[in-house]
Image 1: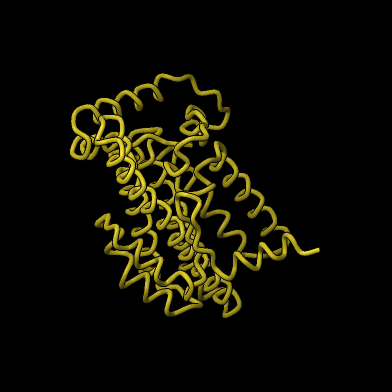
Image 2 (image 1 turned 135 degrees about the vertical axis):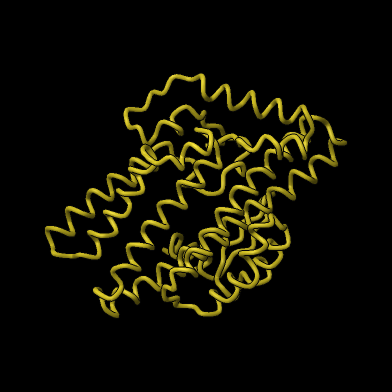
Length: 284
């Protein structure tokens, strides 16, 4: 789902008045549509048209779902029920944490700071959900023992890996559209595409930097200490400053951290983990 950006000042800075006007028109078009969704959590995504082009306007598969937040809410309800039934407190408090974040989507004044149906608002929702889950784990860590913390360490590594993989894809798209602009000799349309892609990169980079900073601040266990150090020293600052240098840093370390770095024009750097999965899929 290509959520439009609400960062009109950045569109203007990078693409001039034409890009700002196009960005404003896109937002107004989204806001004028009737919402067909019965779940209030999905209303922002419900009015966004699906399209096959410009795939890299989105960061990953989750962005293409019109029902991601109602899905999360339903999963959380199920987790709380299972946790209560089976006396599994760790499942219960994680489910409650997700439900709390979903409630804040509707009731929190913080959501009013960002325009509805924008990529910046969608990124902020992800920060709220993951921070709520990590805060619940932090509060309950002394109650759950070593087994729970070992599972948390695996989850922490997995979250970090996905952040790095998606961050690579987004920065790759910025480079691609910049190259396309040179081919088209800087037309207004191509300038708008660059500005729009950079705005998305800024939003997703800030999301990535924020999530990694939250992971470090919560002082949760990491399974791979070198991954922690790499995220802390090479990625967080670059993410918050929208530096394209982080793409090179991720690409260099892809093999060491088993990252799947998908490139834009059907060119792939495939990690051993992906190769093994492909072998399993096609093994007779």
